[in-house]
Length: 632
Image (tube, rainbow, N blue to C red):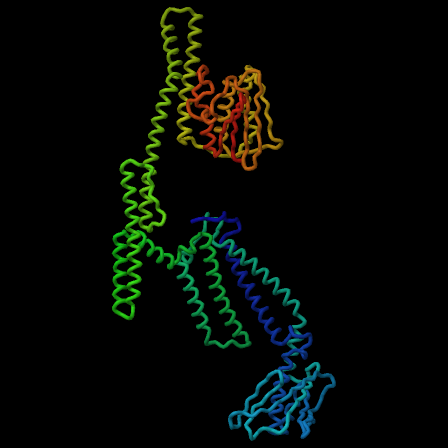
């Protein structure tokens, strides 16, 4: 299980439970705000600034106009029943010249009103019965009537709604009261809604970011639900949603407290389903199991593994069965003969291609068996099965060649050890044997002191040579471990130089250190870096010309830091710099100086262990070594 980050102190089960409860409360509040927003839209607050200017008020006036016209059409006296409403009205009908003339006018209770004019058109219906059809459109009201009921006039009704409509209790008064109350609180609702939405977003961000984390547990916490296959889990959530909606379907949602409680319960359940799915999805993404933990992936991977791991003979048998059955079907049923011939030709060409490439592998394998190790099988344009086989043969050949190279290298190293080190080991060992023999004979106290001094010096030399051999072996094989930390280059140079100050002063070597203005840090092992610098300083003391200067420069190269050491060589340097990095090679080819020729090789190997590089350059008698290490 992979954790993206460490859990925060505040991420625990209690804070997440509180966050979910707060989210539910905020969503309930937003539902309340949303309900009032719908009511605002319904009464027309967002249309105009006054209720009587809204389309909602016009629709009510148009509805009353239709009813008034129907009543007047059936019984002219029945329109008097509309006197107990918050509007007055006048009915107009056209005369023989098509001019609208008033035919009825109700009592007007107020001179302050908002007037609406509704035109009523009559059209012939395509059926002959007492029923009629009413259409409301941009041109007014159209009524489809039977032919025997079509009047020979047109009608217009003027509805004059009182401003304010508060004389009677009707739909105008009810919506006017609601419009006024909502209009006064519109900015409060908008402010509370925006704040609630922001809080919901912040709450959701916290729930999503902390999903799967708990301060008492290191990693992503996956419960039983999160371990279910993702597609199965999604299907369960969808089914629960459908069943819950169907369970609430028999209930009628009306504008009362009981209906609102039922609707709120339904929405809370659906919200919890959605939140559960979202949190589980986020946890799966964080643990990197979203795609792999699905039934689709499992089935597909299982089929893929069967096909891939099936032996070639069984793959061929399966292919031949499918091919044979397909040919039988195409030949037996329908006009599939030509299609069967085309498929057979394609299969034959594929088999021919397969056999040609198999023969190429056979020829190349015979060459390899005869010792021609340079032969390689060309895997380009090969069938997949043969490509894997050819690549395995090439890899096997590369492995054999690598083993032979390692063996040759080992033999070469043994030869170098015998050839180059035998003299260096023999010289101090011979001196030790000779002086031990002299000590066993008669000698004076002064001679004994001299013999012991020589024995001490030669034994130290032999010890140093053996230590260098062991260290070179470890460095070249990578058996030295490195603990990379942030190391101050300026400090380690000054500290390491202090050990060689007396030795360099005795040779009259003036050391000039050019550090960077600001401290530079590298990613290195302090002990290994110390050993590299010691080897380089020791090399200077052995081969630098006395009474000269030694320059140590620390240079910032962007992603790397270079330590450049330059000195003048005592002997002529007629050797390739790369050759000096090899084992048992000295700048003093006559081998008059003490040493094993392993110092620079060991330093180069230690630099590689720390992801760095040691390079040498020679310009006349100027010898320059550059140690490059990654910047920390």
